[in-house]
Image: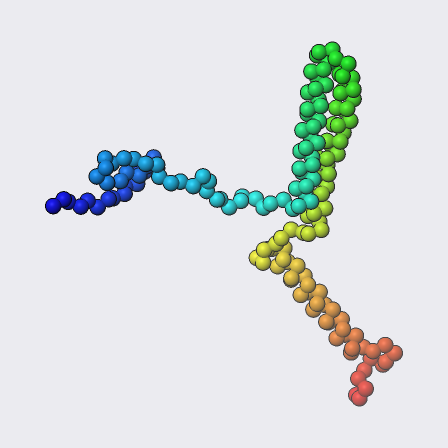
Length: 160
């Protein structure tokens, strides 16, 4: 009667190799590992208008760099294309600067319109709440004073 062996799986440390205790010779096969591990983002995603402006700026800057390189190489080669490429590189540099400023302005406008997301424990929120409470109390005190002193009256109650 033959013996029945139970197959055992042993996981090696950092090598990521499985060895099986099968009677077939103890072959080693690679352990399954995912291609990547999801990690939470360290920063929030840019808002859509800001991201669109940033992509546009990157494309314009890359075209500007290519134009500058072609202008430089055309100048070295003594080609007729050198002068038009230098002029277009200068114009493209102005446009690239404008595109970078557009990213900055779009980001500022986004922050002003949508504000900064504050947490409930924010100090600024607590200070605003306290200021609102004080101004409500001051308005309530003014209304109470206005009810007591009616204009045109003798500043006394109707029945002494």
